[in-house]
Length: 466
Image (spheres, rainbow, N blue to C red):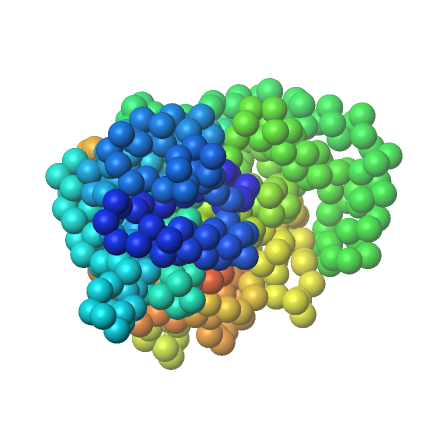
């Protein structure tokens, strides 16, 4: 599920009234569409007659079949009317995210009869879903070739993938400990585990440094080849080969921890112990790791969760980047600078070279800070955060705009109403870190909130809530 689309349980609903032949026809048309859209699904063929749920006696067989298959979500297309009790009981027993839809009804036949009353059946099933406390998404009654259906299924699957972060949990490794003066990144680990199944694995910084230095020593020849390649493709300033090798070893130690411990993300202390031990800033290691998994800088565990969210909504087809919301654009009142260091290399602007240099804020002679601008495009921003048992997930969209150049990794983002964004984020419970990725995914992330009890969804800007 993490590295692709969720597995859908396709549960076509019919009824003994209206045309069974028409119900089967629409079921088959929908199956073909899902295959075209490369949606992984398990249906009820060879489980129930015609592969349709048409009676309450079908509930247990359908539930057992879907449980055995390990479905992540349930699609209840109503193919001629709807057996509302059976549909809702299957959904309640499976306790996975549910999608409800049915094909738009055609004109009555010349004799006045109708092959189906799908819309009527949808109204009935929605009532029973409410009665049983089943949260569901709905695609408006439309024809099977309508783009509304494709977009609705796609949005639902993305929402399911995001909801899984909080429904089935993730493991996050924390390298080091929280820096004393970063009170903004204090989190309640016990509550994250108890409420959302999010496990924080503590990773000792002394052990991490020891293993990284061992890697650097034992793989010096291999790293030597990579350092020579980096010096040909990047601008590397005031950084000898030993320091660059140490950064590469830090990258590989981070990736080994991810692999060996089943982690979906890391929160990293970043400074100063790691920097002093390696003789270099290691944020370039973060950039290389960020191409493969979520990285939260400065021990920001909630930030790592936010990064996982924006990756999940893309089915992990592209990375995320935990940015700082820093300064407003000097001439555009609705634009803000998304800035930090350690951005995924995949986000680099195509015409820009990676430059490794000194830290322009902290007074240090050490090098290793990555500098490269981020590419242009549509942008989605998300921040998961909370205090005192109240958790919220803020999400909004914008687009890159031109603006003054700055250092490290940055892009200017214009939104519909920055003052509204600013006030919402300031009034909390959020901080200055927010995860970004490219694309328009805010509505899908909002929709995930339907399936995650205990998290309030907050829309940044004036987009409609899902």
